[in-house]
Image (cartoon, rainbow over all chains, first blue to last red; front, side):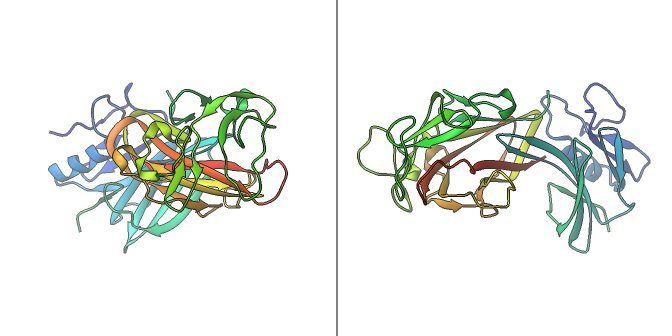
Length: 130
Length: 191
């Protein structure tokens, strides 16, 4: 049975994604040593239990971005950018509709940028049952 | 621990310090020795960890010199070699991504820009880069990189808390004089 985190504990990072599932459970991003990335475990958990993601949100530096409910699929990944002078890490969350996706990049400094791109597909995208 | 990006020579002997450290935060390309110019139309014979104005050095990084579309010169070897013959510790740069948890990387890329905007080309040089991977599985040819014209780096799909990207870099000046408006940029996505 796939391990997912249903409450905030020491493995849940300060900046994180949060998924509300169709059975009412709330799943948090975690960094549990030795386990695969929590987004991949969420995908497996949803398949095993025949669930879907109702809502996905991202929490960065105390600011929360909540995506529209009940989309065809949801996207999550991180992005890091660096030169010798600066580096920036962003949480990227988004949703899929009709093969296109809207992704919000939220920087640790609370900067944000939205992009409309092709659906990146699995493993970044978790699809809901049609 | 936060996610970090660190820049080293490919052999990990010397690190290019973060800029905010104030010293030895620059990769410098020179002719036959530190402080020696590269002639216009020629390529770097040595690569150094240096300061912002190139007046002091803190050791070398492996030098890779453009020889042809698919070949390069490396120190102490007279004949040109195929890029795919290089070991990772012969790459100019090792860019290390460290994360709290095991991740896979996607869509990594490496750019050369003018230190003003990552979309702008560098000023006064032509820059070539190639990804070096173990076992000869890296790039077979150089890519000229300038601003948005980036070098794509292979996805690293084995989950790990440490991912290292090895890049060979070679430059040639298009005019005489010191070139400071040159910077390198790395980005990657990860799950």
